[in-house]
Length: 183
Image (cartoon, rainbow, N blue to C red; front, side, top):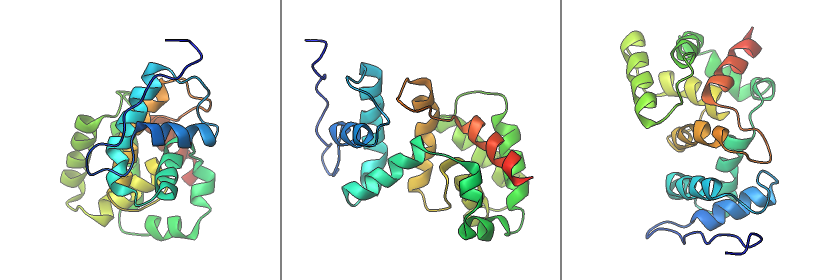
């Protein structure tokens, strides 16, 4: 293959609206990935498409979810009224502190570690649902939404290991920055 030529990426999987090509196009348009993309970046785009496509009803929604991977500013997140509504709930700050402790060892966040962390938080705080997930999603994904944000969270550490045009913050970096901004 010619070095200037992009490797082929796959079309959307059956039942998915978007594929790796769509993800790669969006992140190029936003300036988060230079051309040509590396094989590792294209593999990440494939994974991102499989994780997010079922939660994106249109290209704009997919771009919004991808933006949560590439853009994270704790100060800006905490400046929003919606963030304070989440943080005012029972034990939200305690959940964040415990999340930070569980992420401090630096082990890359993947699906298995995420499940362990969620289970540890459930066990410690004796609740699940919004009380647990909204602060977690707010700190790591940048907003307190639904399960689509868990998919965003699972993409963070892998994206952070790749050389995109912007630095992607790991889950650990995000929670440390978020907790520091809380004080």
